[in-house]
Length: 230
Length: 230
DNA sequence: GTCTATAGTCGGATAGAC
DNA sequence: GTCTATCCGACTATAGAC
Image (cartoon, rainbow over the protein chains, first blue to last red):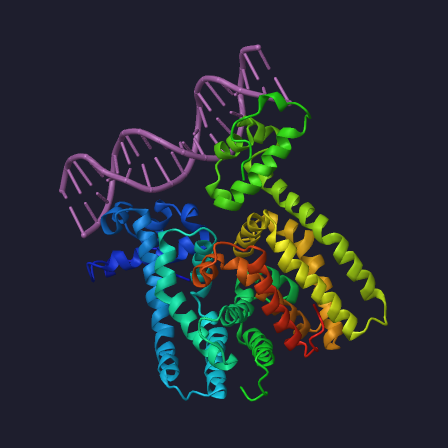
């Protein structure tokens, strides 16, 4: 991530809001890597190529920057997932949506999560922040949860309920959906152990494809569906 | 966790090693809750009811205490899992171990992990530390990985390989075992989201039983086994 | 072995010049 | 809006009395 270590003075003041953006980028990277406590305001300002006092000026303080980073994650994830979730949500409104159709939509969504979403360069950073908020929630957890976790969960629950022929509020439906998400998360929660065990250097296209095959096969078995989903 | 907030001077010096133990207990709790950076030596000494300088005396410094905490986790987990892993390892040495027998052993192990291991009072603390080491490994990761993650993984891979009729080094075997562990981990990685969604206050016996039912059913389906495992 | 006192460093915040 | 200089508290580490 070669993000302007040397300040590019010729490009400064192209916009009054640029320092704001640069600080959020720096916050994303450094809060993700070192956690809220581990990232100092001096590190953040230096990485962003802005003055230390700008943090107070633009965000009121370190905590304000952290919350702005959480909101930025919500916007980014929303931009990627939003259209797909909207499409599924629309399909779910149709009473006639069949079990097969629901399963197909679920497969599409899961495959997107595995091969696209989790292969993005920023995903590790996002997940580090989200994981820490899960363990020790701060004000930022509400932003992340309402911003994209709940919307995504509701779509997953809706599809799972249709496939299982159960109500959307059935705890069994939610538990099963969580368990499936857990299969995907495992590879991003335990990257060090997975890579050490499988002797992978990172998650490249081949590795993601191997993960996709195993998880999609598991999902097919869990819902007792025939092998017809790519 | 009412752990001696008021120092009990009458019980001091019962053993020369007591401050060591108390510091490790405090380290477990505070490193788990606040991370390495977030837990200060002052907090640690106060919680343990020992003098600040004892950290240097017994462990050489804050880092030494952290590594001692990692070793303590390995010992505790080893004490709980060790006998069970040894039993399975012995069974795996027998050439004649059938697919059904392997599956039964796997079920036993997974059910133990879900209902006993993950319901223990210290598990959250252990998992917080392990999770942080996965995201940002330090010297402690090697202690944790070699201490119990690798031994447990090898047993899981061995059983999975027998059930699938594949070699133990087949990447598919390892990926599938990881995916199953992911289903269990999900409920401890995302406790805040799970509890908020299901409106659970915590993981009591009933909640663990619901999780167990869903995951064991998934595992049965994944390996296409009949419904004969408790 | 235990404790007090303090050195030396680094943290976030901010006043005030420009 | 931007930047320098500085405050003050908190941190880890450690010297030295007992």
